Image 1 (cartoon, helix red, strand yellow):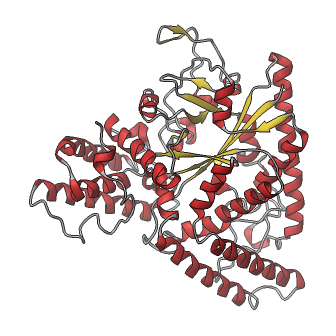
Image 2 (cartoon, helix red, strand yellow):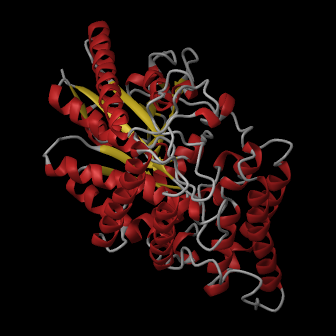
Image 3 (cartoon, helix red, strand yellow):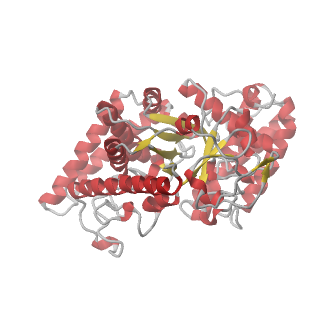
Length: 509
């Protein structure tokens, strides 16, 4: 029996175009496009060229789709690339005067030129390239909430519904088809959200294995739920109601990549993310070891890193095959092995990661005992048992504390107030004003603002971005309830996202 391996990548960035420059702002999108999206596209194209079978699931949030399709992104990315190239040229005089250092600088110049040629060949349309890979069967693209809103903390289902429906509408606009899969932002699950997904004919989402409710002898719509432990649960998707399935992340595949001590990205041969050339921002060093101070890091060696990628891909593919073989020996069924990660890990944080993904798919295809398939393929092959999930997330502790805590509770007080006000006004909203208000409240609801505050990555930026959209929402409320007009400088018109979405199309019928 052939095992099934489901790899799911989740791609997301908040709305940053025109919203600040380095260190916080639109350069985040430029860096991710250069480090992750272009290399992944290149690897997928090579797999297609070599006729290597295998499909992976790729979530792209609607707010990221909007930015990748923006002419402003295409123009600003090319300008940013020019700046990066000039910085590389200037680095020659800053680096150690050794053949190794000069070779590395030249390696980066050639790679940068190659990615710019790739970008130009695609006409700057990265999303279109991903869409074509979906049409060829290499990818199955998932949608998500419009702005990655953290739905468990929303004040009502109608606000959740608007995030979901807008996400579906944006996907359909750019992909030319309706989605079947959905990424719950931050894997944030609240019982009942499956009903909202089913309204849009969405068939599945992803969650952590620890989310599975392993209580005994539960009932589900008067049907007995088989008892399963959280250890056994990840081996199959589950019908959790409304004929919506959940795929549970396999703990072993998660640990092998994410674990701080055991994960592949921490290997000493790989490029060090945290040490950058002070003037240019380019990264010339390798991790060396976890104990090595940043000042003592050794120069990066691309050839050595490529060898390590091959070794780690072989190890991971063997792990997947071993897990399937052990499961088949125990139960007669090799089961379904799910690996789900943030896309931006591969290339941006783990510079060599996109090559590792491709190498894993090549190894699995060459051995044949486990196939990399899309989630919908699994759903057509298996009769799903009934199950339940607990309210949860993939954040620290599996709860909501990464987004709701003493530092961020004021954000949620304001969001819930604005959501109630918006729902009260919803029956009378129409036209441009209603569309602008929908856009701003969706941007206000982004999970990124409390996340940036809690993690300390960009506390001031996260606070400012939330307040910007919150104030626009309040200004629009005042205009709608007062004069019916709002100055462009106060709200709405300077956020050119979701302009093709109309409130009338996504509000509840």
